[in-house]
Image (cartoon, rainbow, N blue to C red; front, side, top):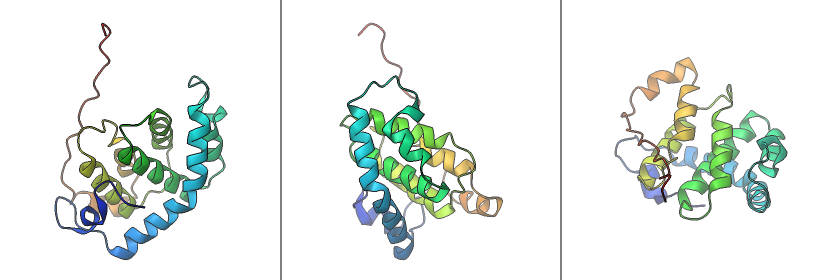
Length: 167
């Protein structure tokens, strides 16, 4: 699995300190564990009515079946997938990211937040929802990790463009 910007962005100096290789590999290993089920759920939901409540969708049932660590891995994988394939139909994936971001108490780690912020910055402004999950996860950091997040630069989150009602 490759990140939006590749290993170079995950490990080079810049706005965010690099993650140790072992930490990054651990994050990718956990995401790979949920990836097959996530791909299947996303594909099933693409073919169904988008008006179903989230809990009635394949993605919702998958999310409901996971413990907090599994749900964090699913959120990270879905965030990563949406950043990589943003020009495709990511409506279902973006919905899953929003649903996971809205769940309190998932126990995000500073490393997870750090990785998602780096991915989001690397994705660039074309991916309008790129900060949804990292910002929600950063807000849930344990008090001991809040000092770590203070070292991260403030990243301007672009406003969502509203659809033009005349087009």
